[in-house]
Image (cartoon, rainbow, N blue to C red; front, side):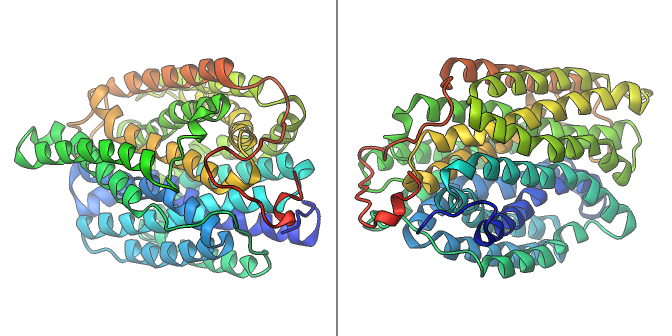
Length: 481
């Protein structure tokens, strides 16, 4: 297809559809945090159930994002995006009607499947359909507004929990999804015409089983110890992850092409994603619990407490994306994670007895600044390291890494910080500050990785990666190169 200007009618519809579609998935990923105490009170289960409500969604989302990106490149990005939107919406209604914790977790797993189909398609549609000169601004606006949807989640969730019920944080997805599907009707289809052969279903199954087994062990062992079930899950998980690596090295169209990992910038940007998003996922999960269970905030007050992150990202992310398009992503990808680290250090002051202005606001403010500087350049660095034909694969890998980071953080950070045995509704104690410092160290490591791996130069079109069978038979697929 021919690339279009961002300010054109088609360009605006592409942006609207992709922001609404991926935004609802990102919103759902964060809105649940503030509702966890209410879910725990109604459905029971303590911290372990709260972890699973988050990680059930992240598990299937992170495991299948690679497959979602590959399916979009192969069968049509708009078609797969729409299918994911439908699955996500049906599962959201199931979450809102769930009678037990087990039913809620099952519906969250299904939500992750839908999210895995729609999230990588959003960036791939932008990367393939928006002309190169406008792509930095488009990615910046996409990153900013979808980032806002994540950041505004606690506010929206808090209002819904206090005004109605935690169930409405899931039911509200339905009208947003309908709007996204209506906008999507005006978006042109795109695909990678050079990809042939069957998709890598074996790789998708292996990585899903691998993550499920290892995450099950990480969450359950602190509570019930090592027994036949947890040991079998851990062994199966590790074996499946090893099998995934073997499958990828031999499959003609692997979910994770080895050629991608030969790009230093692609590898470095994804390592930065892993560290920064692990800190983000773990810190926001525990901050919501700290504000409500330790400091006595209501659900709505907890949402308002993190509102500065939303405002800062809304104002700055598009501008930072355009700036990174001109100057290169390296400097903001160093400064941004370091700013996030400083904000998390300041959040150690969020303790019982501290006022909002002294204990919470400074950390939230600085963290929001750091995040807004990081997100758009990080996304642009990933996409700039590959050709537009590889956009779906690259987007799927990067999104999978970011969700995997949150998945691991929610499972591991409470254990490392000494919080794994916390009963439902109980204060977190000194383990919260420990968790914030660990998260700050992860962000700082992300800034260091960016300095070592991200190119100084501004965006330069990357050629198709060798070994991915790109023929570009239709000249229009390279029209924006």
